[in-house]
Image (cartoon, rainbow, N blue to C red; front, side):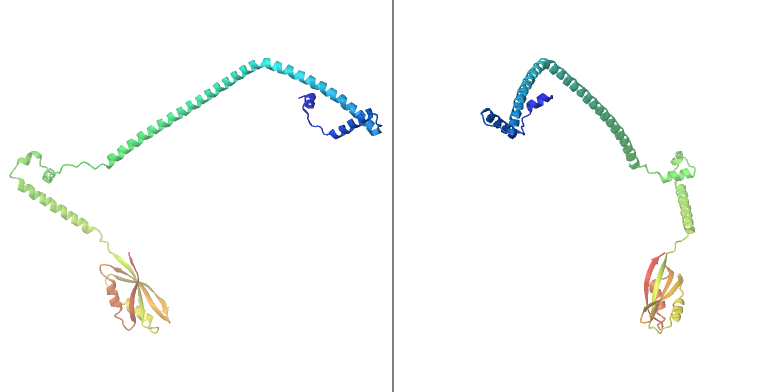
Amino acid sequence: MSGLQALAQEMIWFDKSRYDEAERCFYEGTNGIPQTPQERDASTILQDIAKARQSIQQSLARVKTAQQGNKGHSRSQKPPDRKSSQNASKSEDQSELVSRLKCVELDNENLHNVVDDLRSMLLKLESRMAVLENSQAPAPKTAPVNKKSKVEEHNGVDDDDDIDLFGSDEEDEEAERIKAERVKEYSARKAKKPVLIAKSSILLDVKPWDDETDMGKLERCVRSVQLDGLLWGASKLVPVGYGIKKLQINCVVEDDKVGTDILEEEITQFEDYVQSVDIAAFNKI
């Protein structure tokens, strides 16, 4: 925008009061009213304002003529601009459609690949399921085998000799003899295996009568109990209260030979030293 166009569109007048005062002084001078030096200056300002108004009007007229010429020129050039804009918009739409079609084709190709992968995975799963079903299926039942035929095969007798009616008793005796030999062999192998002996670890609390009881003598009395399958272990004195201590002793017993009832009866026989016997812990070995 040029300076003339800016002046033509400017609608703000900040110094209106000064110009009004100068105009008043000018009209007073023309009417014969004496003027002061300030009023004379104001009259010169009014003259300048009149000149400025004329120049502004001339410039506005020039601007109007220039704008009219530009409008006519723009009207003459508008049809080709519209056509060119339409062509540009059409080309943009076509390029956008082409890009969208390419995106759709890529997505379709990716979907086909995914579907193919899923099909191959399903086929592998079906094959694995078939293998598992075959492995878990029950084995077909076989026909019962005739014991007599096995015995005959063991003795070297052919199937063609089954017609012999007089040899059946001898074959039964032979089968019984083989069976008895196998039972003897099995029992001999079983007898050679070591027998597992069940043992238990027992922790006993032996309480005296009072604090004057000789705990050393009490321990010797307890260890004097000797039974088949009994083995005494470590011991210690545990304070109970009021100066009284109890004997805590460990032993290992064979379950089939020694029981807790027998141990309690044997230890409580020493009535001069032992008040009671309790089982503090019982563990299988």
